[in-house]
Image (cartoon, rainbow, N blue to C red; front, side, top):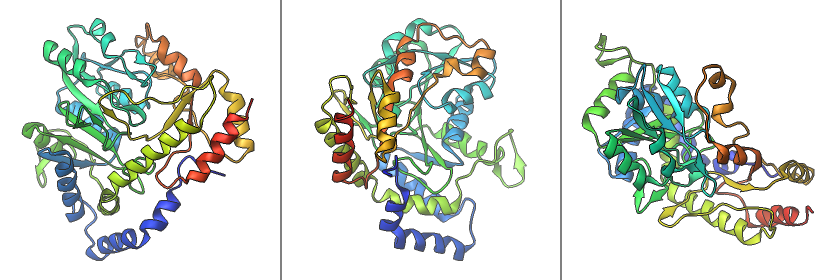
Length: 364
């Protein structure tokens, strides 16, 4: 079976360095807020040319703590996309704020910035654009709206480490950027983990306190916070992979180009890369009307596939129960019924992509 992602191949390649990194942590017996976490924060801040990077326990917590640091709470509204992983909207509701969904551009699967303004109210406090599947959201008009209405921008970069928009790395365009180190991500650990980047000194200070039970000084707590620290073992593993992230992303882009070249079916829409954007292909997601038939054919030929995401957020039971608004989200609903992601990871071989595309092209 050709898997969606093969973590074993990457581990075999990096085994010596990863094993040594883990052993170093075990020998040091420093497992929480240790030197690897601190060094990883410096390395990621340097990579993005920002002042601060703050490691946290997950990509979800990165979003949650960023919203808290922006002052989001009860009665506030936060605009985002309904076509993304659940966590993006979940964290808004966890703070007793209300997610307001804006439809997507079907070409990129990202929030349509030209539909945002009509959803802004006096209660709107922030926008969370998601750089879905590794393609950047259209940020310039979002920045313009944020300036016009005095809104915060929290970039959800969980699937887009290293992607750029008009030469700027994602996460550096808004007030802060939130990344996930979930094992399948472009830059990943071997468990949950996340990081927040920002140039805002006050925001960084607030997030560091929030991640550590509301404490800046041990056993002295100024606010209610969270237990959300990036584990030292995860940080050590991620540091090894960080040295290879540009190579990993380059390989993903080459694999995507090969897919685009070899898929020869008029009923299949392949991913695009909009002008000024550098896609890093966390997923290679196609669209077609009859995906069930193709899924079955791929499975019969030992090829994995996956649907990200089959149910848009405004149709999730938890939000329908809360009467969360879901008007005019046609593109999100259509894409949810048509998308299909194919195997995509840096170590995927040319021969495997050729085989996958041959099966796709002869499925009719």
